[in-house]
Length: 127
Image (tube, rainbow, N blue to C red; front, side, top):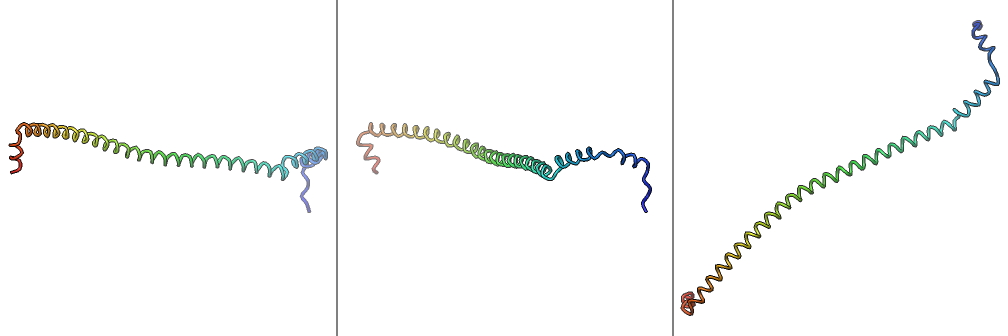
């Protein structure tokens, strides 16, 4: 036994148009068929994968940039220390040059004094 058909359902069945149903069926098969659905899914997949690759590239670029900046910073610290060391060595070099000039002048004075004393200075030094 089946329940009785309600009057409003009977009116809807009466409005049924086979031609409209065929048009709807064709539209659904065209727009929602397997092939277009797969094409839409593949397009969405490609879009997501492209975005993901772009993010990976951005992340890889960011990681590489960060590594370079860390290296550059450590190199900069090393360069700063090297600059300080070079400045220190240059100052020490100038100091040694001044000391050398002072000793050379003292040597020249002593040599001149010795030459002025003549042979007596020579004999005095040998003793």
